[in-house]
Length: 285
Image (cartoon, rainbow, N blue to C red; front, top):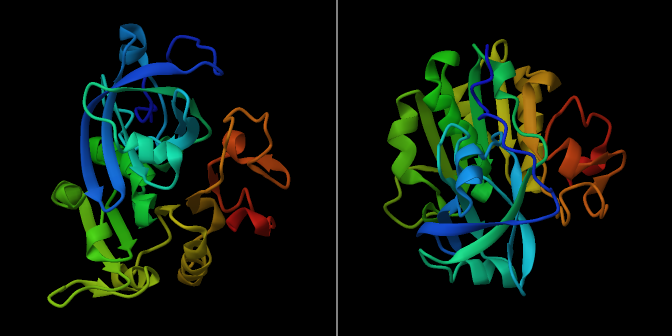
């Protein structure tokens, strides 16, 4: 299958230098979580910007700092790109104060994304914990856009409460290609959805491992339980892909802050198959 999951290659750029991007839209998705639609100021870069679902950008504001943030829009989207930012420090607090028309700076994209082209013809299961749905949204939307290339899509999303379920306005679109199931840790009276841990959703959908790939992103504490349940269901390590959470300060394999034993998360990751990290227990912490 031709790799339609990636745009045409962008012109060669200096990976150490950031590019200016304008904020087009801002909305609050959940308490402390904002969604941004942006475009590059440079028209050539705006037209040719290319990435894979699961890759990240180094996002900065001058005089404040820089942080890695995953792209949450699909590579099939033209002219703009999107980020989902959780307030967690000085930089993200400043990003949350931005309004349409303001600027920020980005380097990248960096890292390895989800190998969607290799999953052609398969069913896909997306398992997201909390804001982990943001990078998975890029892959979900890409798969929905190329729906005839894949089998059934299943999105499983867990959050601390209903207020923290993300992109709920897009569930109906995703359901046209499969199913969406959500679960929360706790809920107010009147909540009619599932309450519990995300592995309960795997039991609910009862996936078949023979022709299914699983894409996972969320807090590290979630990984052990989800991976254990997938093993019980018969999934092979080659069909399970996980996005690792590390503070990738440089993004280019120089600062060594994201090193996990034998690999650089910013270069070999953040997306890796379980087969690739087999025996490296610290990768899932």
